[in-house]
Length: 264
Image (tube, rainbow, N blue to C red; front, side):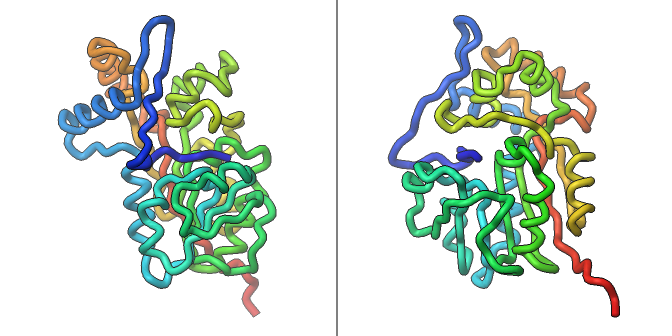
């Protein structure tokens, strides 16, 4: 699974680049273009910000939250003090050992077989995880099991219908340049992407099969992945305007687990 870079450690800031030929785009430059795009498009916010706010809305002093595929940290680095029981789970032991918020309880495990009792959590979250699942069905089922009726599942993932992801699959760059920049990760934290739970239709089918009811599923665009210079940024903004809603690059979902027990 992955290390979401929505939050960057204040003590260590790594400068990363996307390279295409001799052209590079640093993370800092991309964030500057995002701020510019937000000014020019009132109401637009990066998907990572929307995801953070949706998580924050569910966190209280009584909330038990599981960060599925927590990697080395992410948005929970900031939000975990709001929860009663924050837990991070990841199959990569090294990532857990290097986790940037050591106060969070960490467990080495996989999403398809969660080591927790039924109803152990009120909230399950994940960012940049669904795209890596070989078999997402059992993972969705386990999420529902550990949530119980009324629990919420919040996630952030790429939309496989976006042209960049189509190009990525076409060129088989599953561990390379476009993926590194698109998901905001260093190469060491980049895992093969399968995209088996990465369209609104796929997600809805998986959710309905296990008893998850949609609260919201937001499709959020972002033209900055092509912003290697000002001209390309402007071109990307124009393309963003004509890109169909269903092809926007990011998905932020909120689902609630419903009680599927048969009536007596």
